[in-house]
Amino acid sequence: MNDYIRDLIIPAYSKEALSYKKNDFLFREGEEDDSVYFLEEGEVKILKKKWVLWSAKPNELIGISSYFADESTYNFSAKANADCKVYRIQNADFKSILLNNSTFSRAVMDMLCQRIRLTNTRTKSLLEYPSRYRLIHEIIRKAKEIKTNRVPYTLEDLSGVVGVSVRLIRDMISDLEQKKLLERTKEKLIIHDLKGLEIIAKIT
Amino acid sequence: MKRSIVDIPSCSECDVEGNGILCALSHESKDFLSERKGDNFYKKGQTIFYEGNHANGLFCIYDGKVKLSKLGDDGKEQIVRFAKTSDILGYRSLLSDEPYHATATAMEDCHVCLLSKDKFMQLMEKDPKLSLSVVQLLSKDLRGAEQLLIDIAQKSVKERISEALLLLKNTFGYLEDGKTIGASMTRSEIADIAGTTTETTIRTLAQLSKDGLIELKGKKIVIKDFPRLVSEASIYD
Image (cartoon, rainbow over the protein chains, first blue to last red):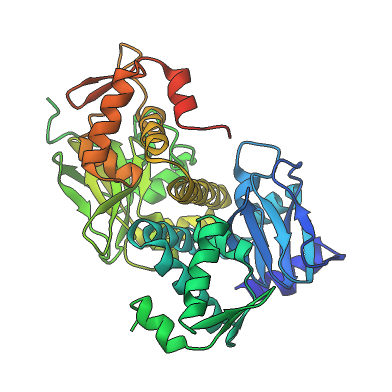
């Protein structure tokens, strides 16, 4: 369904691709909300203050929920987590496509349903599991997603995702390093013992 | 006392004064949706549908209040949202063709219409305004879900309980006295909204009452100092 947006909607409504370098902001919380973004390449972190709400992947739209809030500004920030290529769809066009194209509407509904489901799962995890489990779960999830044992997470990234202070994350990572389960470098974590991590997080 | 049987009219003749997304449909669309509509009565505490059940239709509340909750692996309930007259339930499951994501329970005696899944999906194809409204509704749900996530991650229990009271006030309004929240909630239910224990909720509500922000009258809660309660909830957005 998202290929449909890339192949048919974007060429009709957004002629020019915009490029962002890693750590550039597409927009910041509080800025005027005038567009919805389609991410073609890269990854974009959606942040509410320092808290990572979700990470947008290629073929996803960014800024939909902000568009429908009764506000004229973005209610979160969008920051490139890698070099990105995006297309902008003006808000007026976005509404017009929704009203005139049921396939597009369904694609947008599917994206929103998926994000609600992921958000509720994270809330459930926050309520049920201690921060140590959540940290290890997130590291394992990311490693499996990108299919490597070198997980590109900094302490600050993990603090935003897990929802605890950088200091606590540092302490927990140090403990895992002492157990020789992983190793921390400046910009990534290197997993040495995935099975050991899974046992601690009670995944297996 | 509410009657258990009332004559619920067809959608096009519905007399409910609400701002639900179906209220704004054209007469023709409402007639279409009304075909194969069923009407049900649920007593207070009765379950309308369970989390994990196959989604076989769209529920629309004719009158009454409903809570939607999810059960954690540890058996603890988490209230995810409330619904009131003219609100619809179960739409996310219909759209994603998945089982119901939460359990819906009547908070008071309720009359609820059950609309055909096929009719709802067909109408979305026919009526773009309905599609737009559904996207709008999902966006609102997403913002609510994200706010709950941030609150639970970052706010103290006292802030969360204060916010839970404001959520109840915003959803159900006040009774005629203009200061009592228009829904009766047990301490356990308030705990399930704030994501904490009943014991902590009892202590925190007593503290808010002692501080003069609220007054507790059994299951009813009177908001005595709204600005201070907003401040206590740390709501700035």
